[in-house]
Length: 237
Image (cartoon, rainbow, N blue to C red; front, side):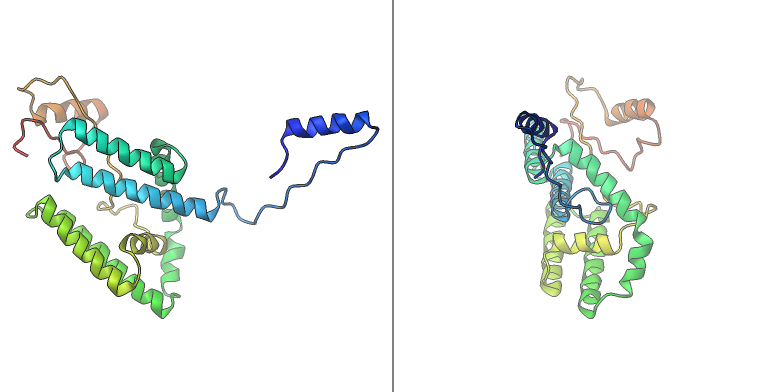
């Protein structure tokens, strides 16, 4: 670790008092490349962001019918865990992850070409990753399933993929995204949801009234029927 500017100044002053010249130690040359973070740090942040994304998605589905207070508690706990694992706040992690995924998309052409250069083992791994990703997408789109059934089917698909590929399902999907990241036009790509809790509402308030408020305030580019889910305490579930 290099010395700070203050330490260098103090050492220079002491050396001058002795009639010597202080030469600060040279920092070791940095590794080649444009990355400012060590690969280990990046991997830790990606893993933490992925876990946070999964936790927030599950919280959004609210399979256990948690009330607003309990949902806030679970959300804060998930954010605290992610912050500890990533070494930054949850908000900073979400912003970093969005930038990271954008940079990954920029390398998509190069990564697509590299698919043809994969070893037989990685080709098999890629096949299982694609099958798992397609299976999860179908489960998410299946409105006939309830949250519990969807979770059960997803775990079964992940277990099968783990057994066939020899790699944990979450690591398999993360590896797949580095090899073949989603296109910008992929409307089915999962995003980290933003959850807003609104209090002091009248019992006569409807979901349409809330939707219209945010739609008119934030605009149709941000608020659409597909991008927003609204639940009220008066809903049956």
